Length: 262
Image 1 (cartoon, rainbow, N blue to C red):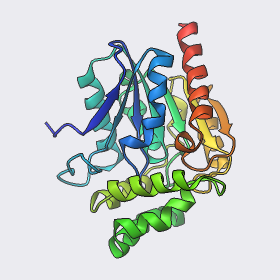
Image 2 (cartoon, helix red, strand yellow):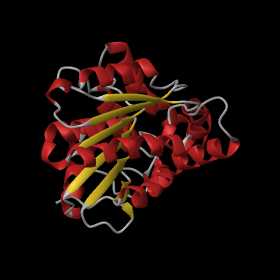
Image 3 (cartoon, rainbow, N blue to C red):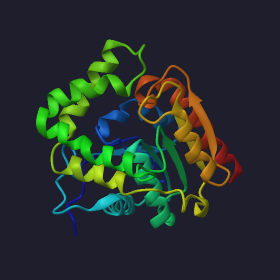
Image 4 (tube, rainbow, N blue to C red):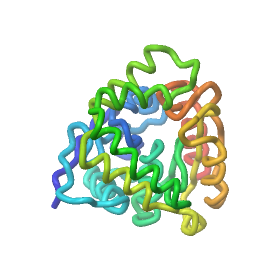
């Protein structure tokens, strides 16, 4: 059995879990603004450092998107909740989608934020994703994060948000796991499989996302039966960190409706 990834938990519910999966250049602390949902929803919020990120151990070998999805399924099972809502941002959303496809019994609802169907939709995009890790190797984590962070947020975002995004990025990524994560995105195209998802799904996107533009979130939403689709105003690729009140409000409305309908 693999070593359990690092995670933090907020809230004291024994029944309802909101499980959060970060993006390719981040970690569990990207979801600190979502702790407010614990009391609002009567759930426990759990966020992990994916294997190979920040405090979690490196995988012994390249595990691909399936390996990260299975690691999430194992962690969720070990926590023992009756109901699990999975929130994934960017790469975390792609991994969450694969989790729902591979282990549908582990997921009661999906929230996919600033995410996509994967980067394997064409050869050029896949090649660019694989090549991104070269910059980390050449520059080191701090300089790579300094150059990358401004692209992840809206142009009008505060200096405080920029500093936090840069810090979490630099503190979280390392080789070879970052290369493997880039490879996992390059290898993934969920378009043929999305119509098999029978899980209530909310797709969200910052209206100023330059990394995963709104049209890619729309493509993801259109592929999933009955998915809801909303944009978060004045947010870039990290809407949950940039506009947490707006983001949390959409999540709250979505899950409260699910609870009411059941």
